[in-house]
Image (cartoon, rainbow, N blue to C red):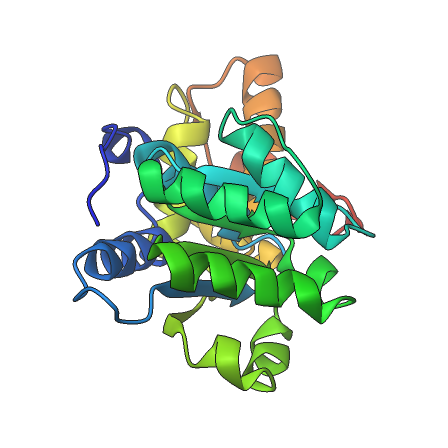
Length: 244
């Protein structure tokens, strides 16, 4: 299957996780017809899974399903049809067949975020598998750590996984790349960047928050370059779960 690509890679932070998942997805698109075509992206919160999925979705003009708790099979298929510009018709089975026909006529990769919300009803996961099997469209599943263990218990779905892609904590080079994007007009010295990376534990979301705080500090102090000697050793970074 081929899709029209929109050039987005030059404008995003090329972290290790992102480069890895883009490479895997390119391989998935080039797989032999009939081979498994499901990519599972999983890992702890804040590592950039949703961000990576959205970038793939934009580049490959996919269909994005943001899962809602309590979704029924009918609601999920209806959401898929609406995302494809189709008016849902008929009962659940008829809508599922409608989605299969729509994807057959206009093949597009399907991206499903918040995968963990679907495990309350195995029919939802089975429906996604059937859509993949009947259309050959790539399916990208994105979820928190632990979803990979649940999927392994669903033999039919697990057998369709092309790659199990675990997102890991960012390294210091990822932190540097992020700083260059978040603070293009402020140079963060290695001393302070290392502190950001260490305190955030390689969590991309927390590092972005910390860099934003550094940017505000630099603006208030009229600084074009900020190091640990400017920031100080007692000042804390504040994240959603509190200061560190």
